[in-house]
Image 1 (tube, each protein chain N blue to C red):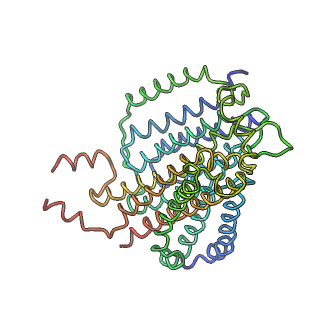
Image 2 (spheres, rainbow over the protein chains, first blue to last red):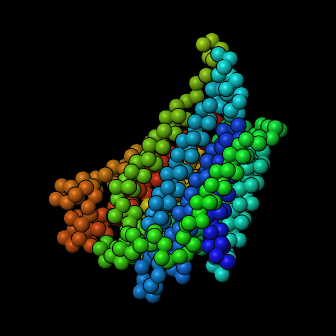
Length: 117
Length: 183
Length: 139
């Protein structure tokens, strides 16, 4: 059952590729941002999977416990999540502005409008 | 047993991701994305990352869902369906994924305490942080003290993103649609 | 949302505990799970829930946009100011050990203040972003 130890990473890669696929094939800008968020969340899971220690507990030091999971990836991802939502909001704001200027959020229609100028 | 829970939850996550990519109704996509975030928060909890789970639950299932629904209200809730099947992107994705899977074969197994990541600075933090900062929660100690510069940068990024949103959407809407014809 | 009686009552019951919980997460983050980032997000979510149920205009009376906008900057400035104070007291930038006589107490104090700064900025940015998006449709 040694391959089960890699299952986390494989799901991470699957999610990453699902997000990647959504970004490159879908023309709708909101859908693209959702795809980017999928990609982002998969990276979070990759980091947190690596930080886990078998038999460990949450890294809040107490005399009762001896083994703790690695706190460093938690720190990195904790800040990345909040930064992620802030940058997602910025992306969504851009989408709203594009909609107001072009009247559409579909990529091909935007390109078409750009060319017709 | 713990790993079994993680495996089941990760499988749910994969199924949700497929649904998110396939669906064309964007409201459903956004709601599913909320579920996706909540599921990943549960996974973080099982993987001992309590602080991260906390944040993900509040951010992913709460704020980002609200923001995306707000965007849909300002744009359109339907994705234009593209009937044509795209083989080249699928091929690109499969090849990239296969390369990455090949890369994981050398990775340390799940929960391996001898993995390289657990040998570097982490033991030092766990051992000394409570003594040096007087704070038992090592995540908070590392975040605020040992990596204080990093966190200052992150807060600045959040500040900048907030300012950016205000600049983009804060000013009253101009009649750009009319003007376009005259340009 | 004026007529959704159940939503309004439940929200009224829930919002004070949400805000209180955010403060608990903020100030108990040293000993349990929590800290500025989480607290800020939860605090912001409480206000967003209020705005969703009772309307953005009502929420703007509670959290005035001018004040929230100032708060966005206040948090970052508070964080940076702690670094400057430690610089003036003879330490290096963001070295909290010099903030008190005892290095451990100094570290604790420094972490407490910068977490507060982080919490203020995150909460203010979340509320501002929501207000900006919500006001857009109407203007």
